[in-house]
Image (cartoon, rainbow over all chains, first blue to last red; front, side, top):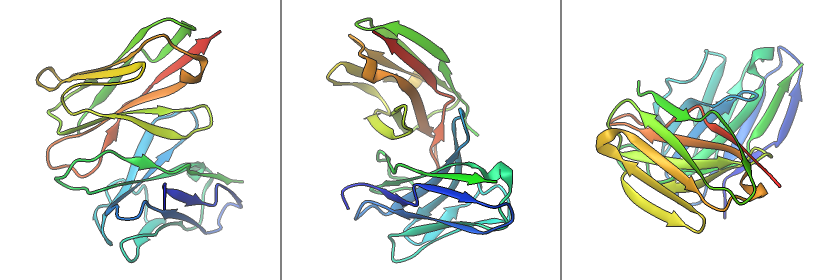
Length: 116
Length: 109
């Protein structure tokens, strides 16, 4: 597609429920990144995909968080048993390549998650 | 990991004024980007500038990699320039890009 698409744009969920956030990167972008931004804060790295594999999962805050990428394209970030502290905007970015290559990121509009 | 500090943290400008935003980083980098996050939360890539100088309209950026800093210049500021400006870097073999704390800019008419 023309840009990075994220869905849903907004999600309100009850504490303890599972949620899935979706990211559709720019066609041909092999690198995909998930970040989290709490209200008024900077961006916190969660996970990086190169193709379908995740060489860097160091930012996932707990084992309740997982992510996968299929077909070198769409990625899903899953949060199990959501907690109020999970409330944030979840941002996805893609780039032409990752690892040792260096290209600029293109971000999606984000998913605003509110856990009540 | 690499530390990224931005200054000033907050800035208020009168429309038409010029400004310089600074990004300092603690290690050698091979990737540096400047982003603008508008009041609606959308992040826009302004520059990919690991070294040297680039210009795009009223914006320009300079990175002096050997001295571990980058500058973003905004000339003739407009209200639409309001938002948060982030510097983001990648160092050595690290896969992820680390974001700075941001500069919140408000341009008033």
